[in-house]
Image (tube, rainbow, N blue to C red):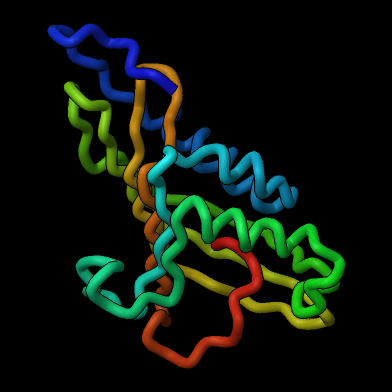
Length: 170
């Protein structure tokens, strides 16, 4: 993705429907187990972060439930497709529900955009269903047409409680 705006021109902010469609498409890719396509939604330095506490300010100086850069996402995605990864057999199924999408900020010069939403994710594997809920904060880059994920922050409602292994991307 390239920024198509000349240096002296500003970008028009995305409309809410464009942001919603992007989040719905992301959820669909995860539900359809199209993990490599989902990973392609990230910028080269994009991160997937799940804080371990509600007021955690950064993933580098505090313990996180999950913090993955491009390399760690690739390792995890490879495990989903590996029949020898017995802890993921059978591969878990999921349904992602995304709602209450709002664009919080947009920088007309860089295309940096913060989108806030709420989610419920159902995970099913080996006759067990788990339900996760919380808020997403997507830090996106918008080039006037497309989004890329700079950071996806997953704020679980119960992030400070004892959690079983989370076998799907939320």
